[in-house]
Image (cartoon, rainbow, N blue to C red):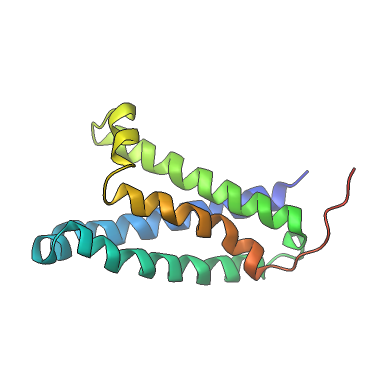
Length: 136
């Protein structure tokens, strides 16, 4: 069972969501009205990625059970899935339909969010201790 990797991925995804929520509120209420949505997203995006790279590095170095390529991949994918699910739930809580949430992924700032999913999923693999995956 990959329980430590799943728990770490859950933590990682929720931390990404919390940070994105805070930065998103700041972007939406303060930065975007001053410089525009696209420019505000281009400022927020690298900040969020840098912070999540730092968090991934910290998380994978804590429990020794997270070493190994498979565990790191599980953590990254779990974090990415948890983040997307949390964003969907927030949208639903704000009265946005699932269909509209999905459509919004293909417009700014949703495009930046989608672009960040790849690095977010790969950060644990980049910063963790990899071992060959064994069958079995």
